[in-house]
Length: 121
Ligand code: AMP
Image (cartoon, rainbow, N blue to C red):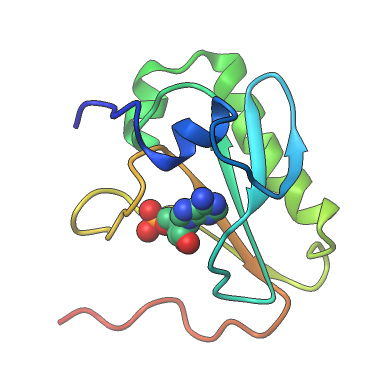
């Protein structure tokens, strides 16, 4: 899938729409989800134009990839979830029910999250 520069996270990165920022560095931005599914629901995104995890690992530099992974753990700690437990999730494409076509990692926490996903079938 080609990257759509008009997706909502691209607009956040360009400063065209606001976000509730929790973390930022050269390669990564993290902010609160606008429609939280848990008491803590943060999104971590790379600043580069990548659609998905597989697009990212095919095209992003080693520095970008390291920064993204590091940010996920650092943000979880920063928002107080380390030790309590949390869930990290990335939806990709049609089967993954991805709504925003810019790579993002959801971090959920703040309550027991239940089983992972429904069983196959
Ligand atoms: P996904 O289905 O994984 O693509 O999830 C996209 C997520 O982006 C959803 O949880 C939305 O609530 C969230 N979202 C959409 N627009 C915004 C926005 N402007 N600021 C923060 N989160 C957003």
